Image (cartoon, rainbow, N blue to C red; front, side, top):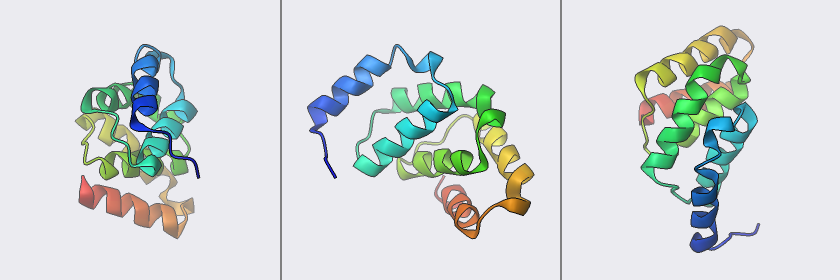
Length: 114
């Protein structure tokens, strides 16, 4: 796996900052998950921007993506605003009956960490 240097990753964060408002569920989830996998903290302001965009679209995320978002925020120990947490938790509640054990355990870990 290629690990770009921090300067390149910071350039990506700075460049994407002006585009976050146009992000959809896939871009939000992929960005947060990728930062977490790269062990690169994009900064609190960037995480907050992603959270604010995710909130109104929470119902558009798959259950797996909702859990991935919560887990990614937990990796960075960044607690999203209460309305975003509530929206994501509502989605998990709605899909819990069909969720995989992995998704449920990741959800619990994220809640315990946040």
